[in-house]
Length: 136
Length: 136
DNA sequence: CCTTGACCTTCCCATCATGGGAAGGTCTAT
DNA sequence: ATAGACCTTCCCATGATGGGAAGGTCAAGG
Image (cartoon, rainbow over all chains, first blue to last red; front, side):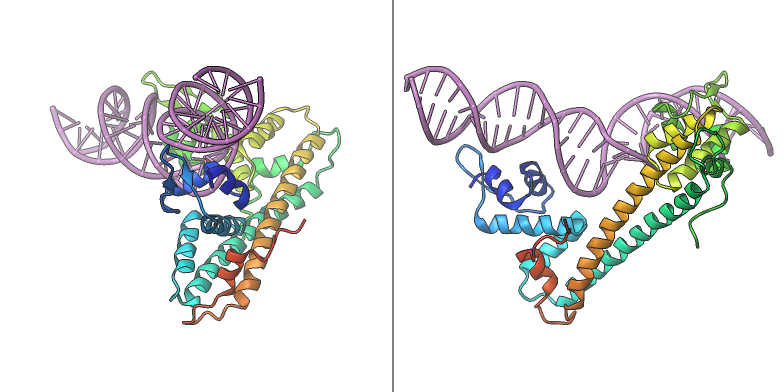
């Protein structure tokens, strides 16, 4: 099948398929005589793997490692789990940072009248810097 | 003062100060005869405002609006609050997405032995796609 | 046989906020 | 006068993705 069909079947855009090939995440695709890339069902399978890993927030580099482990029959599940755990920790760290920002902002917004008057603790905090809001 | 001192005093790198000027977030700085940018305490104040807003995750565009409101004595606090609320919602949405990814991955990792054996539910899920994990 | 439209190719540009670094000018203290 | 710290502008890179242009290919229908 051509790249368009592979894209539709996998949920990965044709643009991204080419990009993944260009950065070496995917092997160079076979080509027709006229230069069109050719894909088989196994390739679509791989593309779906990549899309799901992206949906779980893995970086391209991590996905590259996941693909290598996936293709290696003798892998140790410990290696996969370690990779996953690293990513879980990162996701939770990032989520915690966002929540901390949100919490700070919510506290400020609570005390903002939100009417026609100009007084606003949100701007006051930004201007005067009530101190760091990123707790140690 | 020169840009380096303004950078140290505000916590915004010299590189970023020039960038903010280039995108119009800051007015063009005064210059010495030899072309050096000149800053006053009020400018450092503004830079700190920007840095704090960045620390709270606001985008440059939002910061631009916040600065405009800050400088406008007749602003309505409602406008500030609305901007903040939009951002709070976005932060919480993003945090929730990260947490959803983390939760899915944690569940998969729980069932992964994490030893020398190759069987691994994490890879299985990526390969077979236990279905969407992003709830509707 | 030729046209049309859908598809493919490569190449370049843009995002967002930030940093790195090069090449070259300026300032200050010795 | 010279060293060293500082400044200037300009270009490039990030990560993952999309947009779009210019041009080649293919299948179907007249």
